[in-house]
Length: 160
Image: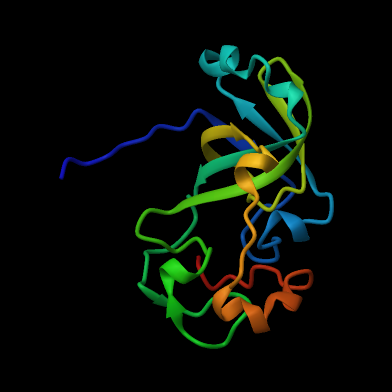
């Protein structure tokens, strides 16, 4: 198969200066504010985005170490398959976060609930639409017995 290459369309800025100690999901980010600096050649693509309260940020985990197919996730002590978790050490280190869009000024998006590390390369932005994106989940796998840890769990540096 032909190699796939992406180039960043912007940079995510946040007060999370390193992975260790950062929130592991936007819902546990505690209203952390940040910005997305979209490169000027893509600014025209922001037209009409301000009408959405939340957006998906799709980004490159630029600080993650090499992928392992079996890993110990943040909220568990058992080794799990990488595709059964959301951590950064993946064959293709792509991250996704749903954040609140506060406002847009030119090519700068002001966002809230940021779990992303400062200077993370942005690959794409998509609007969050509850009617498209919310699904009733009957099972959440191994997280069923660990989900209560989410609000207190921070990155402990295991993936860098």
